[in-house]
Length: 250
Length: 337
Image (cartoon, rainbow over all chains, first blue to last red; front, side, top):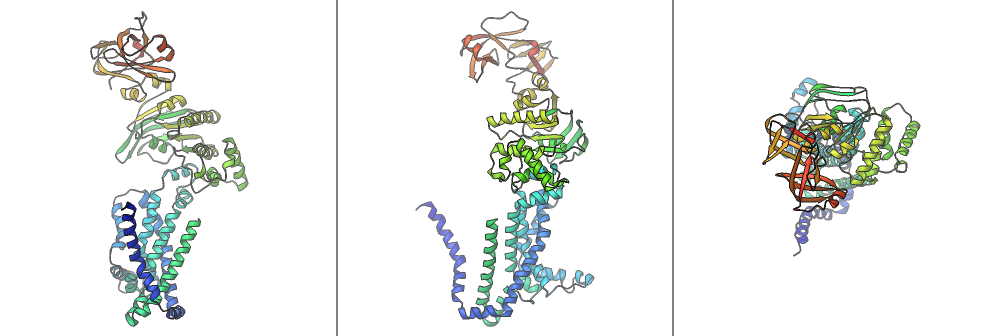
């Protein structure tokens, strides 16, 4: 047997494993129920809320994550390895645990609540916060890898040509990591959309799409959870493809 | 204006730049010569103000614009040629028309006017180099710094680059600081050379001083001296492997003698001359080069001698032939390290 088949066969099995449930799900949905579900205000509201909350968390991460990624990529300092590890923690701990941790930091009896009176539990901000916590590693790690690939001598050259370090950063280094920023943002946004565990603990209401899918499955069964799932996946895929196409054109 | 580095020390991980002291005079072409990893690039990054010394001072660079050109040019890949050349002008008080005029004029001087709209990845090696030089010269820097600018180039482009740098230096009359590991490049360009090994400047001087009077075995080896012989010196006699040479050197149980291969004469008969070292040996190897022939003569130790192709033919030199090798005491350099 030629060696290429040894590579193709496992690959096909993997793709089938991923693709089959999605295809099965689409064909299992009654088109009439799908259409009716799409007209439901509650469904569309929850989907829009999910997309919006994840978008806000991604925008917040651009302002905080890019500077941090730059420092990780360029500077050496004591404790750096530890801090880099800290960024990856959300990826490896259960997301319900993340929800509990956020609740204890920002909830009703937290120090922040006592000092400022702010209680975010059950708000859209809480949803964005939960999404931010679990998905920010995707952005930071992607941008960090991007900066690592860029020779610091580009910035040195810009500085000798009269740029300030800040000007050298945003006219030279930042445009050069544009692809990493875009792909990191897409990954983060997508990961935020799919978040369930941390969100449900911090904010059951307003209801996000993953929570709505869970609720319908619990209360009404698979048949009623399926249409919401299909619509959610459909909208996400369309947006992802559009962003990828835009990125490819650039 | 002149640059002066005074007692510069810098720790970089496990590597140290140690007590750097040298000066570069106004309009001088200074070449910092040393093997890779010797600290050349870090030294020029300190001169360019990109790296701060741990101790010591650098004077003469405070208000000067620096034109720094790295080996791989560091042209910004997300900008086209025009945007690269005009990059430094955007930080000056110039309007778009003035910037365009300046860029077009400078691009014309370097023969790259037709490339202004091209992306960097579309350029050839030579075009990239001229773009990088145009980007630096458009700001009229007071100091030009080149970091290994020819090490990635083929022989032909390397020679053209040296000519380009010599012309640029003649035209601008500015201080040039040029880093290289290639001693031939250093000899062909420099007014003054500084040799750096392992973070230390071991010798500075004119190309002639450096090449004719290397200060140590290390420098002689690096400058391509083929005859560096280990032995001992006692009362102006250097002894190695049963051979005695007349030298000017102090007594030492460990000494090295270096002789340039073009300072040795070959003859079929012993010549009577003022040269006090004359040895009868056997030709053990012949390496033919373009205009010269390297003949290796065993006189107790192998001695490399460069002669012209004409002399080689006239003397009918072949392996195994017995021949006289003669050299002056003054052509020998004696080191204890």
